[in-house]
Length: 455
Image (cartoon, rainbow, N blue to C red; front, top):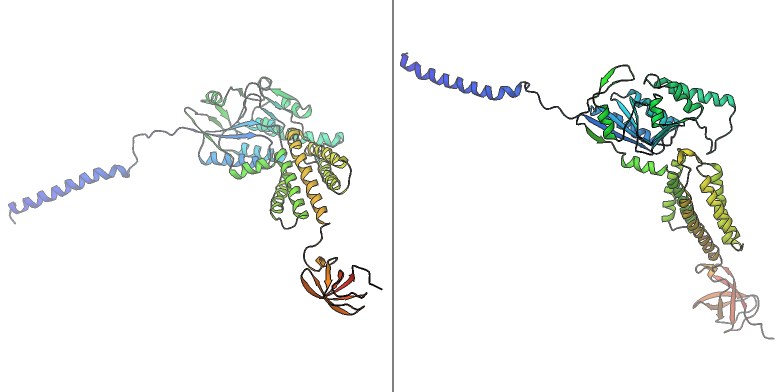
């Protein structure tokens, strides 16, 4: 083959090689990690809230919030607290998740005027960072044994046992957090409370901040010691604050366990079932009443409901029914109103619930309840006096006309309500004379003359 024939082929091969090299330069960089550093995402701060009584629904919400923060690799979990306390089981569940959290947890008592009392005090001291806003307080963590809504008198040995258990639980995490366990124990033994300055000076909290933004600014770059002993530096520059809200279901259940809502649910349930029992077939009041009663029973699992309060409400219902049946000139109705008001106020006598049912709600529910119960019962009593309008009972006492003469004990025909009936009479009745139905035997009527028989 000549040199001239090989030259074009070599040039074609060189062109193809150059094209393949250019394509490789275009696509190969996408197959290898870029050496240029990508912009780093802003750190995430997951925000949670404890607002109100510490109860199982709130505990589930905190647990879910901590799990969500871990899955999002957040830098910090910020829990804002304002609580009078709550159930010890729910408090312990929250503390266990705070201690086991992979993300540092800061508990902040805020805004001004808030408190972290009783169970809130334990939660505050269990956090990686404990902070309070000016004008807040914490403490008063003495355990309260409540039975049926009342605080029973217990002997000294049992009280020491309960307090020692609470103090050991508090020491188990407060010492590792670098708090002051001796001072913290006085919140249990003496029910002592602390302002934010007293808590800071006593080494119960780490710092005082005016707002969440001020707290984040103070924590940026701060090195903290976790519960397992590892040290972590917080990098919160330009952090993105992400609120974690209660789900719709949790919001609904949280509202149910509020004393005022529980009382209204209880009253609506009783009134609905009472209406259905006194007026069968209405259906709607029975359905609503049944749902309200079940929701009220659900709330009773979490609230320290007093048996005396329930009995007073039941007594009020009895008084209202008797007022409709007997003439008492309003004495029974007044007694029922007083009994129901006292029952509402005694229903949840616990400081944890902020004093229980409010007086305004008790008054707003009692008066309409009294009027409706008395009105419905009077309708029932009045309906019992009505003569039946259908069936054989309708014929009893009805007046008719003899179509033919009725001999004593003989059968004849009478007309009643425009209808012809076979009839018998113990006394003779002439045709065209009025008669009265005294008994119904199948399709035969027993009658008696309205006018004395002629001699």
